[in-house]
Length: 286
Image (cartoon, rainbow, N blue to C red):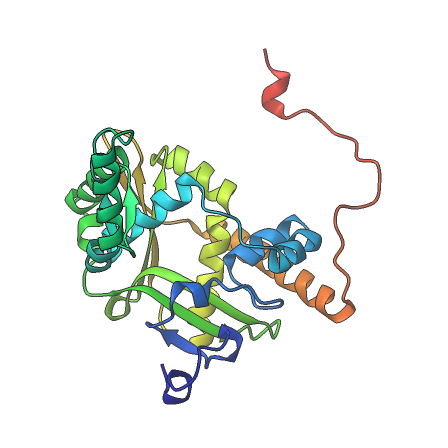
C-alpha cells in the first residue's frame, strides 16, 4: 500500500492505484461500488442490469452455513496462521440448562471475543479436506511460494471500467493463479457442470484481463477442486480454449451492458414480452 493510502482511512478500491496489492482487507475488497466490476458484478449483469443495480445498492446478505464453511476452509488452506487466530472448534460446555455450563460458556466467549466458532463436525470435515488437498501429488505442491488473497486493480482498456479481482493464491515466480473450490463432484464431468453453473470460465476471463492490463504473465489458471464428503477426493483442472473463449465473450457482453446502463442511467430487467417456454431436453425423456 502506498504512503498516502496508509495515512488515511481506507478509500474505496476505485481510488486505489492500479496494480497487485497484498494488503487489501476483505471488507474493503467486498465493498460494492456502482460501475466497479468484479466477478460477482459480472454474474449479476449477465442476469439483468436490474439485478446488478439491486445487488450494488442492496444490503449485504447474511452468511449461509455453506458460505461460512467455504470461507473457513479457504483460511485454513491458504492462510493457516490466520486460521489459528480467528477460528476455534466449538467447545463442549455441557448441559446449557445448568448454571455451571452457562458460566463456563460465557467465560470462554469473553476470553475469545474475536474468534469464530466452528461446529465440531464441520471442524473435522474441513481439516480432512485440507489434508486431502495437501496430500494430493499435484495440488499439495501448488500452495507454496506465493501469496494468498492478492487483489488486482485495473482499468479495462476496451470498456474503460475500473475492475478488481481477488485471487485465492498467486505465485508470481511461476505466473500461476490457483483457485480453491469445494464441490460435491470434483470429477471432470461434475466439475465441468460447476464451471457452467457458477461461471468459473467468466472468472478466468476476468483474471486474464487483469494480468494483461497490468503487464504480468499468467501462465496458468488452475482450479483445485476438493469434494465436501468422504473420501474428500481432489482433482486439479484447467479450462480449454473453447471455454476460455466463451468466458471472454460473456465477460465482454456484461461489460458492454454495464457501460450502456451507466451512460443512460437505465437498468432494464427481462424483456417486456410474452416468453414461449420449451421444456428442458431431459424432461422430454421418460
